Image (tube, rainbow, N blue to C red; front, side, top):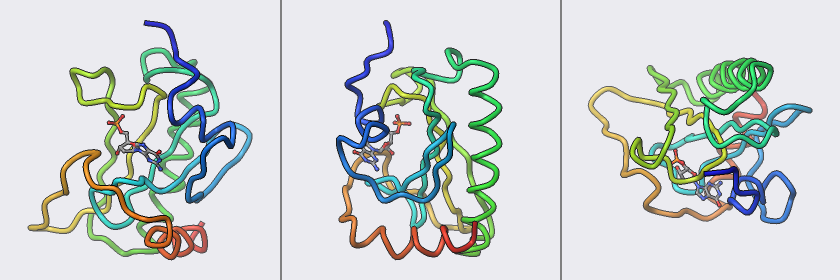
Length: 138
Ligand code: DGP
């Protein structure tokens, strides 16, 4: 299956649909997940069009991993969760639902389960103050 440039993250990268932005540079974009599984659930995507980690170039992998660490550090500083989970799904059988490679950054607290994956949508106004805290911690 080839990369489909009409996927939702490609549209976000082209500015065709909005997102609550956390960080961007020449290689990556980071924004709040609109269906958060935890408060502070943040996504990091490369600008390179690749469906998953298996398709991404070495430079793309490098940029994506470095940005994910940078933003995970900012999430930790901004929200002080005791744990940070990084999740990355490859293929629908693995649970991937948007076919532009991405990392999930998920704050975790002992005894608090994640909400269901890609299920409940929240308003940008709910996400913006959390994103502002993360941006301030970058
Ligand atoms: P995955 O299943 O790993 O492909 O995760 C895709 C994530 O993307 C999922 O947590 C929900 C999120 N998502 C889906 N559509 C949108 C959208 O339009 N905007 C944002 N910000 N997140 C989205």
